[in-house]
Image (cartoon, rainbow over all chains, first blue to last red; front, side, top):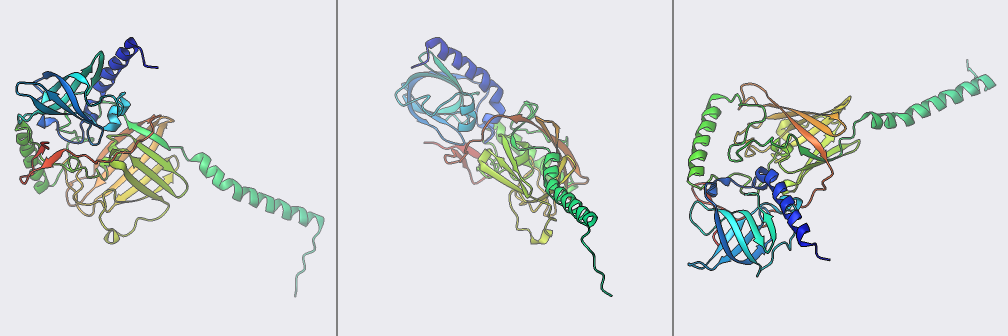
Amino acid sequence: MKPSSSLRKGLALLTLATCAALVPKVYAHHSFAIFDQTKTVTLQGVVGRFVWSNPHISIYFDAPGPPAQQYKIETGSVNAMSRSGWKADSLKAGDVAEVTFKPLKNGDPGGLLVEIKVGDVVLSGGG
Amino acid sequence: MQIIHRATPARVLLGWLLMATTTLACAAQPTAQVSQRPDISGTWERTPDDWFGENPDDPVHPGGPMNLKAPYAKQYADLKKRQAAANEAGTPLATTSSMCLPEGMPVMMAALFPIEIIHDDKQVIVLGEYLQQVRRIILNEPNPPLKELDPSYQGYSRGHWEGDTLVVKTQGVRTDVMFYDVPHGKAMTITERLRLKTPDLLENQVVIEDPEVLNSPYRFTFDYKRSTYRLHEYVCENNQIVTDSDGTTHLKRD
């Protein structure tokens, strides 16, 4: 049985709240400084790949642009994100989504996940 | 002259009493030790939750500023300047962590990710979830001579119980293991005193002695709260951080 929409929203909110408390630990593997914490970018697009790996989970996100390009969005470790409710199948290639992230300072297409919305499910990255 | 003891009923009774008392004492000894020793086994997480400080790029030394000898104090100050510049440019300097290398001692005991303690009469094992680190503390043996120790990330630990406190001495930590950007010498000795303050609160009083790097012993305390979390595997199989030739890093482009 699939969880109801309201339950999923509740879980998403719980995830948001939990991740907020995990921020320092989530990104401890490497410095925050590659990301521009003063900027926030939101894009519509499609999940190209969802990589469930350590030290970080990565979302390869295809945005139509222009210019159309793939963004590499980092989030926390498998261990930390699992504890906040993420699963290896939380996202899948082809999911139509809206992603919000802190961009890389060097201008490469990518950044640190703030949150990703698929339908009415919101997953937070703690960024 | 040969002395012959006759097995009078009184002597037999005395013998039995002595045997029984001795047997009971021997049998009771390990039980008494076990019951007196606090149970520090289980999963532990650092407390309070904000122990890490506000900025992960500028970790706080847990016992306040360290009293470093002159060359190391300058080296540390220079490193902090270079780090700040590299961070501002968005190309932070590589660290052992960004290369997926173990934290080593004593940083492993900072429990960035949860730690688990398993112990018996002979040893205490500490598992660190982050990078699947393992630390072994052998009980009731003297520390080996320093010159016999091949450098290792977690060093070589020997411990013993002093009442309710587990006292552990560690030496032989690799000199490329950093303590929040501070190096150490080959003769560094870490002494820990672990004690349950309550059944669910573990205190670890740590002293670092290092005649090469420190002007005086450095003291701090790590507090841990008991957790029901079960440690998971942590394999750093997909490191996306690339270290450039000048020691700075960037996220792999792919």
